[in-house]
Each structure stands twice: as C-alpha cells, then as structure tokens.
Image (cartoon, rainbow, N blue to C red; front, side):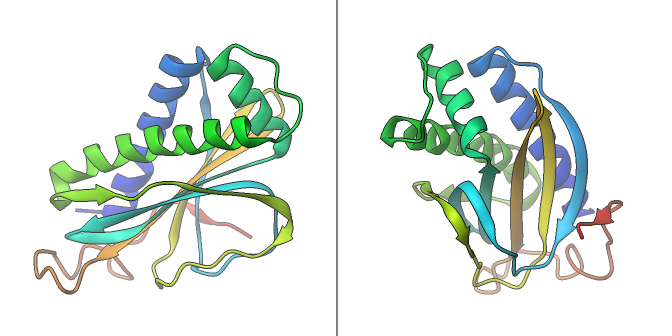
Length: 180
C-alpha cells in the first residue's frame, strides 16, 4: 500500500466533491507535491485540523484572503469582501468537510481515525510548524486565478501497534515532484 499516493487521491476526490456539492464549482487539480515538515513564511488564510487513531497527523487548507472571501461568498450566497469572522468560519467548515472526507476514505485502509476541531489563522508573514516529522502531501487546485492548497501529513501512531512500518517513508516514494 502506497500511503502518500492514497492520501493524494483521497484529497483530490474529497476536495472536488465538496466544491461541487457545497460551492457548485468544478475544481480541477493542478499539481501534487510533497513538502518537508517545516514550512516557509505564509501570507493569507491557513486552517488546520488534527487526525488521531491508528495513524496521526494534520490536515490543512491554505489560500489567499481573496479566495477565502470567494469561498465564503459561494457557501453562504452573500458578498464577502474582507476576511472577517464569517469568512474564517467558512474556511474552517470547508476544512472540516474536505479533511473529513479524506479521513473517511483513509479509514478503509488505515483503520479508525478521529478529527479535531479546525483552527483558522489569518495574517501576513507567519510561520507554521507541525510537531511531526512526516512530509506533507500537497494537492493544489486552481479556481479563477487563485490557488487552494489542501495538505495532509500522516504517520503511523507508534502507540497503536496497528500499522505497517513500511507503509510510509523512503520505501514507498510518492510519484510527484517535491515542492521548491
């Protein structure tokens, strides 16, 4: 089982389904890459949600303030022009739906997983870091000139004892280009 490719496929399927159903938007996947555990500076809106169970990790959505407002406007059928509480709530809900769909899909292969409550951050030139060491699988989607990134890092829960130690890591490379 190639877990990184499974994650990438699950992200694509879930994001496209959520955008089609909730936003009436046909979202196309632009690129799949991996990123190291640390990340560079961020500008915009970043949402995180934790996963726990036989595997543990974090799901994330990253987008510009413009795209966050567009998402909110589409979801709520209103006009959102600036990032406010309503926009952040919409991004949190989008994160919950997309990563929730990924979680449900991955459970068929990796065992039961739970989700935390999403956390959303908005700002300029801020850093984020996951305490884990697993690489992020990153799926990029284009929508009217803006980029939405859906990211997931997932590693076996060493405490569960219910994983294949060869399922993730150097022995099963992801068939994508590293993000530079």
